[in-house]
Image 1 (cartoon, helix red, strand yellow):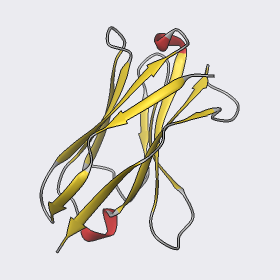
Image 2 (cartoon, rainbow, N blue to C red):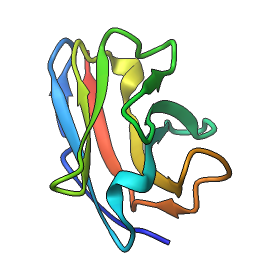
Image 3 (cartoon, rainbow, N blue to C red):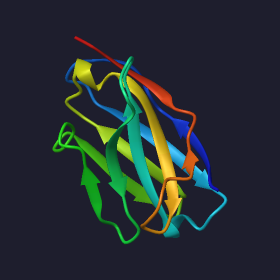
Image 4 (cartoon, helix red, strand yellow):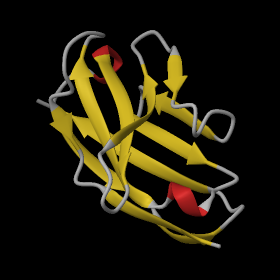
Length: 118
């Protein structure tokens, strides 16, 4: 497994921007698929974005065009840049990791709260 340490998050106003970070250790970072999920109160955890080995990325429709996932393999860190935040983006955000491209995510960060006020 990979150890994941999250930073960022907090309380912002609608329309603001925020960047989350997720530092990984325990595996060769360039061989890890990194993703972000979120869970709003009383809702299921949902996929937000993924950064695959090789650099391709995908996004949930709800965040496409507003959020950007990136990774710095030299720093073993993944980022989620969030802009034009909306109150419905309020959730606990989790980073996740898995070896390679296939299979389940086997490592999860502790989560960080993002609250967007209207």
